[in-house]
Amino acid sequence: MTDPSAGRTVGALLSGVRFGKFASVGVVGAVVDNAVLAGLRLGAGVPEMWAKAAGIEAAILVMFAVNDRWTFAREGERRPRSILGRLVRSHLVRSGGVAVQLGVYWVLTQQLAITLVVFDVDLWFLAASPIAIAVAMTVNYVFESLFTWRVHQEDRA
Image (cartoon, rainbow, N blue to C red; front, side, top):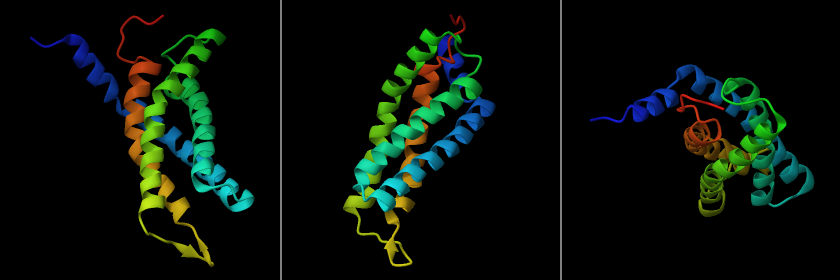
């Protein structure tokens, strides 16, 4: 016998509209992430991994705000305490995606001998970032959907 909640969970995750919104928000996050990465690395000389971590955090905050008001707007209460709870859960949940993203980024930039020189500047660190973001996006979508916004639950507070 199949578990009806499993079907509800899969159906919630396969929502094309919700995933499209999540991916669109991800593009905004990727722009923020890469802008912070480029600004800190090229403008301030911050080491790559630190600049990438700062970019990820800035993107998480922006994406949470947009996801909370748009992608998952019907999934939670609008009270400040509820929003703060989702923000904390989002950070905890996204820690897996952050680990995946930083791991992929580290391999691409620190372990592989790849260069992408443009106007005498190696920009591989910037080109590697969207690759790492794309890998982590799937992890983030599944876990954010299930744990932050709990899209599979019928009765929401």
